[in-house]
Image (cartoon, rainbow over all chains, first blue to last red; front, side, top):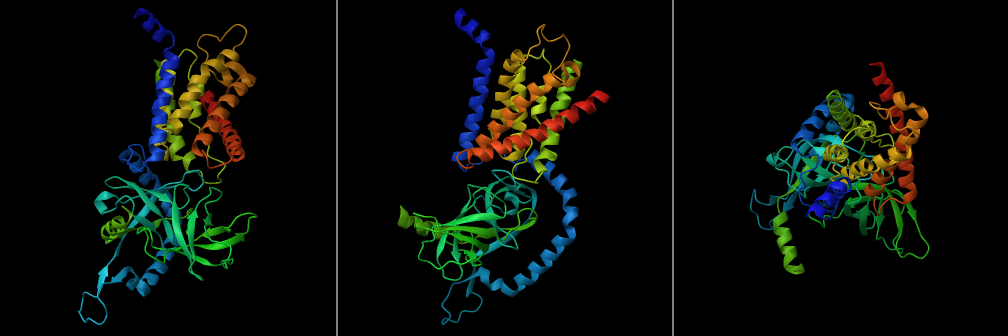
Length: 275
Length: 167
């Protein structure tokens, strides 16, 4: 026993070091392998308040530009609001008022903190559980797809944006309806990579990409980006396609969190097939 | 007592600068300076070794809290704190460190400080970027990120020292 105590006293520096590194490793691994809500993220109370105060100052610099974007978006929305509704009864049955069942609901929020040049980028929004945000909801802006809500606290939420290597979304090429999977390679906040498009497909620079709606996170037909460059790599069966993202993450401010009202129904139907 | 106050103040100041100013620099993917390494570098020679480790760990954890990177900065900070005594031993002048001196330009000169701070700052950034970009970035990119960010951090630390001398 005395020998053990002496050993601990003599090597306390290394022992504390090993203990602290184990705690850090536990945090790193736990965080990378699960989507569970970890205590340490910027949706928590203290950092949420600090970030929203600082953002209050910075947001004045882009006020004029932001207003113009919102006006433009309003007019766009007025033209196309039927898109968010889903046909429930066949048109032949004449039942008034119940032809359309609302499928998606949009909650508006503001980005209070964001990064574009880190290896793992995140956005923090000023809306949270009380306002109706749930983890796993899609986030879009006037320009297109932004990301997926990762964690929520009562009044704030953290979004995993397109420009994070953990994010993936399936997209359809508008011109020929082929779809592939889009991910971010960490090179620039304006670009992403589209994969799984086979060589026989006619893909051209300038084709636009829209969400497929397969995952029940995003509605069908949200703009993701525009194809910038198509490369053929020797020995591969698929194209290597560079995409110009439609959202400018450097000046993103107003976003909409999508609440998929029929998500549970869709998921339980899918699970009867899978499991 | 004065030393404890001074270092606690530096702890709070550097974390605030890190999360409110330097984390918001969005100039390039290659520039994310971690100025909090200054806290570990400037701790006095006489500080308890366990306190050195524990305070550095919490320094990193506070920054993690703001950056959505649980564990990564705290891991790096504790590693640098663990390496510091060994580096100090290697760089020790022939007659040892003077009593009441601290690891700064003012007490030990430019030459000594550069050797000391360049090594620890660079290791800090390299480990940080390697864990952060694990299995994603290639090593050359990580290396460039570490070189550019540490150069910026060193510049900041020098200015920080010049300002604190005048006080």
